[in-house]
Image (cartoon, rainbow, N blue to C red):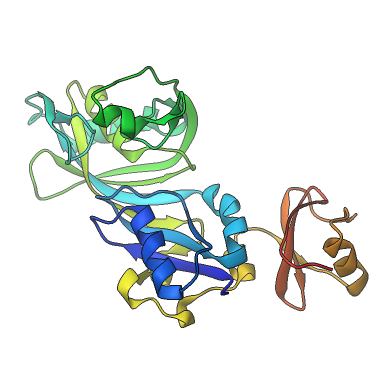
Length: 278
């Protein structure tokens, strides 16, 4: 069994589950999962864990994410993106770039965001997108997210804005696009969404799904590279194997290395994930 991480550049038309299924066939093992669902129409960075590295995916899900995309002003859709049915139209030909940039400012920083009906969140045991396909719309609570950067620029196409967003996990870019349209006095939807980074994992690290080989697998230690790590001695290594606390570790999440290999993840000095036995 291979333990590690592959960074996939997902094509449009593939679900995140499709990518996992393809990787199971490619690497000939069942224990594979992904971090951070990417919509079927979206492209870009998807992190896929192999073997014991699947236990690290929860830490990768928490990393900030960066996206590019286009906001089409004047047309709202049922899915808030280009795949949905048109639900409203406005003449927004008079909106200037400066107005759009100013409208993006209140949508930056810590904000409350209502998840779209097409999201994978569960309400009453059902995923929202399953309810949406059945024609059911339910109330959704606004959730706190953080938009670190919301850059709006012009394109050569009328009423279409290019956006770049760096945000916390759980932020919906299609909702940002719709909210931008509303703030400008009309409506809007998102198209051509591309995730360019999850933490330090960027498109430069990513590979097309069909091109993946064993040489593209990053080690568990590399998978946790966005977190601090410490090299432990033989006595501490034994303590880790038995799941014992270790004093003197940095606060928060830290990877423990033995001869450069990741053996565990500790949180505030206590074991959270132990990859290697005593």
